[in-house]
Length: 207
Picture 1 (cartoon, rainbow, N blue to C red):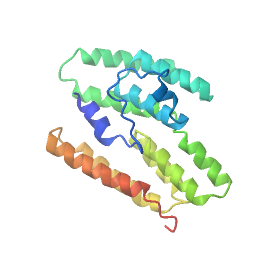
Picture 2 (cartoon, rainbow, N blue to C red):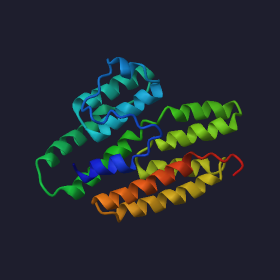
Picture 3 (cartoon, rainbow, N blue to C red):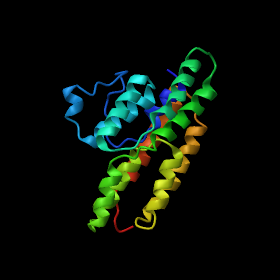
């Protein structure tokens, strides 16, 4: 298992992680998948692609996006597939593998979680608490540091606690970047991640 895979499992910030990661190519035709809400279907497809970049997972995401009216240029992701294949044939490509994961995460975050659309609607309807909660749920389904910090910064005006959450995430990033890949280090990182997620999703509308 590469460190990028460990990184994804330990640090990927998903509100309700759906355990499809053991399936290399998720089937969009399965009843269990079709019964999921659209926002969770999108999360599954994005997570499958990030954890296992394959042409099938990419095509699944494209088909879903087209049905949802989401603009997605999948050709820009194909170089990642080729790079992944190249790295899989090489030993000691850890640094490049981590760089590739970062680039893939940033690409995937271009497809915003559908929770952000729910948040937008809640704000328009003056449902402040729902707006904050849906926004935080959306942030919990992002993967890249840039996207997470950017969305938190955009939320500060309406939810001052977002600034505290952002600092907590920076601390988590620092711990991650200085963490080893041994079991004890990963356990410590997982505990810190879970504490951050708890703080993220503990909504305090009085903040």
